Structure formats: C-alpha cells, structure tokens
Amino acid sequence: MCDEVSVSEQTSSSVLTNETQVDRARATYSCCQVIENTSLGMGMGLVTLEAPIIASSIKPGQFVHLCVSDPESVMILRRPLSVCAYNAELGIISIFYQVKGKGTKALAQVEKGRKLDLIGPIGRPWIIPNQTSKALLVGGGVGCAPLTPLYHEMIRRGIDVKMIRGAQNANMMKTLSVLDNVECDREMILTTDDGSIGYHGFVTEPARECLKTEQYDYVATCGPEIMQKLIAGIAADAGVYCEVSLERRMACAVGACLSCVVDTVNGKKRACIDGPVFDASVVRW
Ligand SMILES: Cc1cc2nc3c(=O)[nH]c(=O)nc-3n(C[C@H](O)[C@H](O)[C@H](O)COP(=O)(O)OP(=O)(O)OC[C@H]3O[C@@H](n4cnc5c(N)ncnc54)[C@H](O)[C@@H]3O)c2cc1C
Ligand code: FES
Image (tube, rainbow, N blue to C red; front, side, top):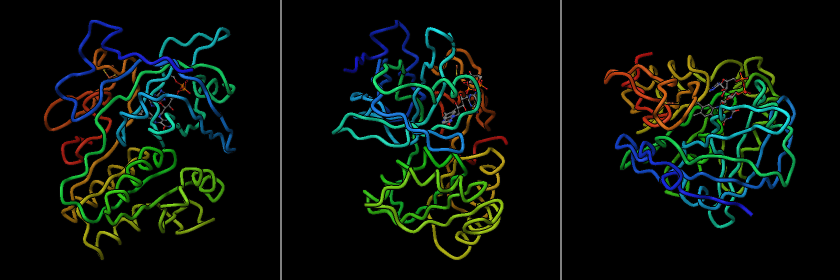
C-alpha cells in the first residue's frame, strides 16, 4: 500500500504552488512501497515504487525528493532524483540512479517491500514548444534519465525525435539501455569517451552535425554541466531553441532555502522550483 497526501495538506506553506511553476501538478508527500530495486552493475540501479498520485500527475523532466534514511543511518536531507519512467495506469514510477555517496549507497541497499518517503513531482518540466515537429535530445550518462519520458512523450505526440546518448564506455552504455522501451524506441546515436561502442568522442560532435544537416525546432539536453553548456552553444549557433536540466545541491526542494541557485539573465533562480529545466538562453554559464 502507498500513502500519498498533497503537501499543501501537510504544511501551511504555498511554496510548492509558487507562481514560477509552469503547468505542473501539486507536489505530494508520499510513503511509497518499493516494488523492485535492481542493481544494474557499474554502480547504477533502477528502483520502481508504487506512487499512484505522482504517476498520474508527473510531467517529463520533473523529479522527486527522496528520503533514504533508515534506522541505522539518519540522513536529514532528501536526495533529488529524476523520474525516468512512470505509468499512471499501474500507479508506478521508476528512478534510474548512480551510486555517488552515502544517500545513493543507502538507496541501492533498499529491499523490495520497504516504504520510502518522497515528495513529488517537483520542478519545471520540459516544455515542448508548440508546433515542434523535429527535436534533438542529447543525454550524457545518468542525464539520459530525465530525457527518457520526454522522448516517449514526443513519440506519443508524433514528433520526429532523435536521441544522442553519450557514456564513458560500452559497459556504461549497456547499463543505460535499461531506459529503452523496445516498443517505441527508434534509432539512437551512441557515443563513448573511449570509442568502445558507437562514435568515439563526446555527444557534441554528432549534435553539431545533426543541427548542421537537419532542420530542428527544439533541443533538450541533460548531463554534465559542461556538456549542457556546449550543447546550448551549438543549438544557439544553429538558431534552435534549447532547454537544459541543471543539477544543484538541494536541501529543501520547495524554494525556501536557496541552496540551489542558478544565475540567469533574469537574476538568480531556484533550480528546484524555477528549474531544473531552464531555457538555455537565459542561463549565465
Ligand atoms: C533535479 C535533479 C535530478 C537528479 N536526478 C538524478 C537521477 O535521476 N539519477 C541520479 O543518479 N542522480 C540524480 N541527481 C543527482 C543526485 O541527486 C545526487 O547524485 C545525489 O543526491 C547524491 O547523494 P549521495 O548522498 O549519494 O551523495 P553525497 O555526496 O554523500 O551527498 C551529500 C549531499 O549532497 C547532495 N548532492 C551530492 N551530489 C549532488 C548532485 N550531483 N546533485 C544534487 N545534490 C547532490 C546530496 O543530495 C546530499 O544532500 C539529480 C540531481 C538533481 C538536482
Ligand atoms: S533546494 Fe531549497 S530553494 Fe531550492
């Protein structure tokens, strides 16, 4: 069983429905049962949770703020993690994670049946411009996770979408393939830093080539910040609107603590509720 309550019922704060949020559902406080938590190797994992309210209201690019404390190790701060897949009918969401430190290590050890406490969906999602007919999505490593539901949404809307996926090596790329959906995935351009599979090099070269040879209306990118900055520059040179998804350390994820500030041409913005997805042209890199 999963207990989900609107956060606005839990607190007197209205920050989660701040006017800076764009067309998004209200965040929900949830205590959700783990249906599956699979180690994928290479320090990666995929956890699937029963979270019907989040699954029915989340939009591609939004994230959840997950509490990974257990009785043996208390962690006050939640961890921000993107939702890489969701199914409203089944009431489930999945998170693709990379073990980095204490919190994600604890997440990797969570067993099926345990309940996890999370808040979501949070943040500004990807906003596909009206009349987009062809889009380029560029993901690096774990940054491919929030692009996955966007990719599927585009296919659902009949948008011609191409994905460029970058990883360090073939093993890492194989791990990322858990994000694929055989029913609707199309051809992707793969790149690896060591050339062990696909194009030898970074995602930037194929992205530049695609934008030079084909007509796109929209570029979306997520991955290491330097990669996003370069992709944003390549898209700007090609005159194509681009969105980026920026990672910041997030203490509250409700817009209150200012630990997640991003410099933009419109002043300082909070990655948790004004982002994580931003119009690339407003970001001061
Ligand atoms: C919007 C958003 C979406 C994300 N989506 C994913 C995802 O889908 N999969 C995934 O593997 N990772 C994702 N991350 C990164 C993930 O939040 C961090 O890797 C994780 O919080 C690290 O926690 P830790 O306890 O293992 O590491 P530690 O280094 O022990 O963490 C210490 C503290 O720093 C924070 N922190 C450390 N690194 C990061 C980071 N890179 N970003 C934000 N906070 C950090 C932690 O939350 C924690 O509060 C996302 C980050 C953001 C901001
Ligand atoms: S994490 Fe607190 S304001 Fe963004």
